[in-house]
Image 1: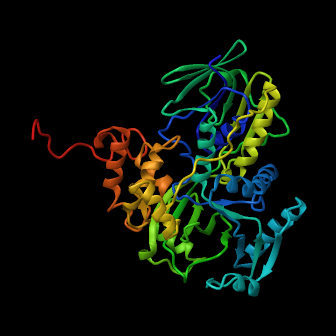
Image 2: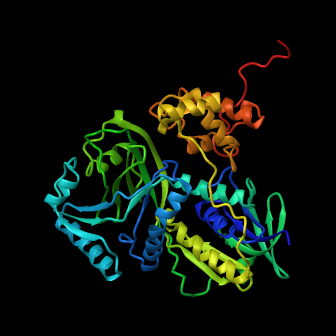
Image 3: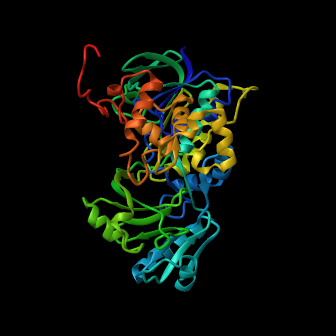
Length: 472
């Protein structure tokens, strides 16, 4: 066998599973079709950590509560920005009051703690910048905000340092059962393994013709439920800043909310099934915030919004098959819990032992904008590249970009550099630094500038040189 365990999909769940099972004496590989890991988390590096209160599905809520409880330990271990800010689901009408009261009663029945119904006077004390008429709100203490790409990257880097092989730009074509294991066929290779952990199921895989999902205590029904999440990233503004995550749920099931980011900005978003434009998004978001000033908008983008409950199907574990099926907006919250559950199934099947030399520490990194003057002087003495600012909006240095490229699972695309460092995410959106990032990427990866891509194949930043010369 080439590997003991093959993990299909290098998203946040795939990376977390790789991390958990890399603690054991197993030969592991992750196969990912894209240029980079964790492409399943939103480009705005801010995600809500839920506590299960908002979820109608009881098993999804349970996974969210489990993941929520683990997040303090995980974020501290990997030095991932995480803050428990709490959340308010606000009600402006009698109908919305009934909705949050139902949510509250459901949470109490599930045994969820630190959940309260608040009257309007207490809400305005908590959020003095609110300028809308509110009757009541559901307050949840344990919710928070985390940087999801940093979390996924941490899982991946530590797994890499503990021997996990990451095979990027390989797409799984088929999975076939063989004697004592499986054959996984990609567009580049053919691998054999004892266990397949499939986080990207496809109906085209041969194995699925023989192994159907069976009912067990971890399974929930799959439903097709996809919408669009319209994001607006707002610059830091005292008048529109909120210390809590704020939600509104209307009769259509749309969710309008704002989140404080770890950088001090605000994310305003709406999940909808309607095809609405920027102006309509601003109008609806303004039901929570004050009127959005276009000058404060740093970014506007769409992202898929899923409410498809996750299935952890280990009914085929005796034969070596585990499948994680479904997509859900709370995937970041549930990831630590899912990884632990899958790891327990693998350990039970393989009867493996913990490594004695497992390294549970992520390699050190620096964010220049967060350092004190003394720390900056010290790091510039070690590497002069940290003294050269590339992105003036976010104070990102050449040293940070080079480190992001040279690290385990280093950036190979412009999007990879942006996600890791925050460069080109400022007010100018890369107009002053994009060419510098491309140049550094080309230099560090020994490529031509015309070979550097934005995020995937055929997304080249520079299509060709303006002029070609035979000699100078």
